[in-house]
Image (cartoon, rainbow, N blue to C red; front, top):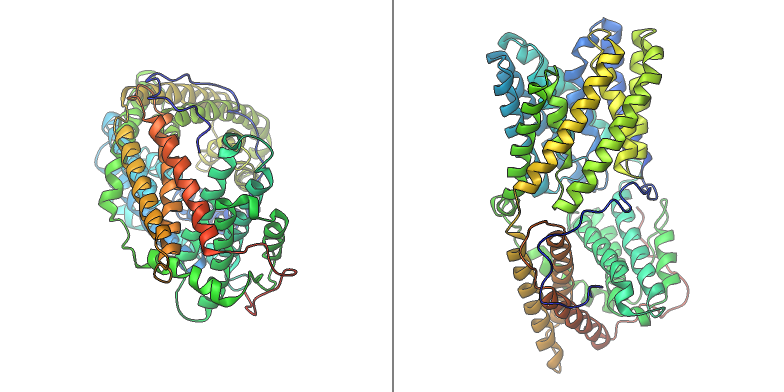
Length: 564
């Protein structure tokens, strides 16, 4: 249910606020994993180049090493595929950039190619839901490579360096698998249980509308857990663990649908038991669990949406990225700054799901980068004492960036900015004042021009997608209601319908939130959204009661005889 009072529409012009933009959040539960992986992936190639006296080649090895930042929340089988595609995507973008750099030194052409690459990388990363850091790292590498003098004969060797570092990054990303092979899926399940417990604990302490954000967060966590589990094998040794975790996610779904009948402490106990390598908690009797999991089989049988259909709705975001990056680069060139790719990358980093989020990211980017420029002024004298210190400072900043960025994007940028500036000095020390001035100007130019491009390129399809999401939610509710009216629906049919309705309501809330953040958009059918959510969640609760699911019965927290 939305917390917004039902109205026939929302204003096409929305105020862009600074409230909460710089507020720090709790760190990610696994904040140290990307940080340590980044250092482990970057350090050996850089130290080897240092020993060989060829730090000028570090940009190419870092292209492959930075792939280790991706896919930390995915199960290892899915992570292996995702990391491989990221490495291939990184090498592909780098290859286009190097070939272009070898064929022309026309800065306007280079900026144009960089903007087009940024748009493609943004669209593909969003469509495939590759996750953080998304397109930004890919765009940073390809844009920087465009402005490095290059010859065609050098390209194979440079790509080989990137590929070798990419293989090492893949190995780093997969390294925890032998120790905790089920770690990612256990964490995703625990997060779903904790989110459901938070909503169940808050339910009844005030108006239902007051808890809509907690409920939306709960359903989002449950959907993330399902996406994680559905990526696991359905047969073999890992299937038993998967099914045990699926039963826990079902209990989280039930708690969200019927919070009044849920014991939050039991959900939290299950979540706590998933930490470490202990046995997986048991939820109840096997027959009931088996019937519930018939709904999972229905989702497994559904065919995935083709990539081209997922790319279609992203056309406005891709157009924003292309236009904003190009204009930011051209503006930097007009100001006579020698590194227009900094402005280009700043613009590429801004674009989020809607204009409101893009505005927030612009503020965070500017604040973080300017603070990072000041940090660079303090670090540069130490880094200039020797190339070994230069490499060590970069590694420390690399760790800090990944450790802090989950608190807020601007805080991570405080470390990313001086690290990027130090990397430019691998080929030779430069005047600190000039680097600081150029980076500060490019940051402001890139953020300003990039955001103006986002204002110009509106996402007029957002309203249509809200209409489609409302229709899908209504149809899912009607299907569940028809089954509720039957005295004895087919085994698993009601569970499948309930899960389908939960997915539809989650998509509706995400779509409505995304569209509400657009500026100059058409009025949204807010009243239909609220009514669809209200009736949908009532039907979910009725389905839970009809199935006589008992998430809170039973003594203690038993465990499945399943080892991780």
